[in-house]
Image (cartoon, rainbow, N blue to C red; front, side, top):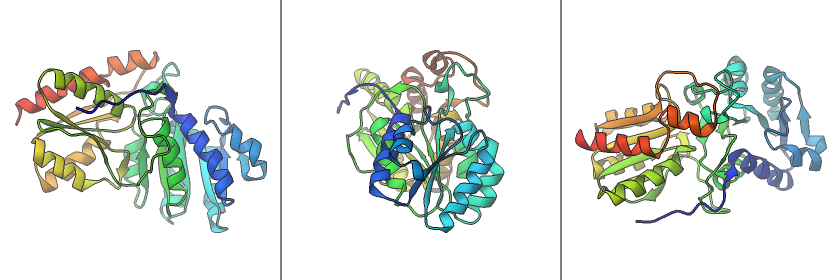
Length: 317
């Protein structure tokens, strides 16, 4: 069984910030807009090095989306930055009408997603944003798992034509993917081969899935682990192939089970290869204030929950 090493906990938002800084040097058409959260989104270096290409719009997220859409007409590649709650729910009409409907080349970059935002509580812990964004025609939806992958994704979406929603988080988490690795939009990454159960995970739950696979291995259960960094377009082939091999699937995400990765996987399986599936996700609920660790434990978003779900789904084969 392959084991992955945490090379040192780093926050995914810093991966975005460092990727954006690098893009500023590589592509003069890249511009950045922020809604009064420059430090939180780690956009300081881009602002310092490219002040003529950085726009602080203040607490006016709807205006930010409109400005970004307009900038694409002149050939610019705008990256907008604010919390996930404000990047989606607060400005959904502007995204739908000004960006998605006309296919504008806007990169909507969202930090502080999910319950791992922590102590700021339910009003800021959006758990429905993946569902909101994946339902928009033409919108690419990406949810990265660690610092390295977030940096790689930030670089990759600059070369992708069309609107993108890039989702990442606040806390420092395990950094375990390849440094300076390639990022292919829409292509799943198989992290672990297995024969008894498929664990399909996204975002912060990918590391938890690997930990769960180790525990299962010690108990004689072989788990295949797939990192789904791109929720739309989904890698249907990878999911179907793995489901045919293992005969059951667990999906794991820091998001409501309604509208998230799990539902997308269920659609693929129902249409192509009906397979027992269990969902590790929040259960139609808002979050609350607490440390990220406390909340992940309370809402069942950790390795222990994945292990339990895996054993349950195996019994359903």
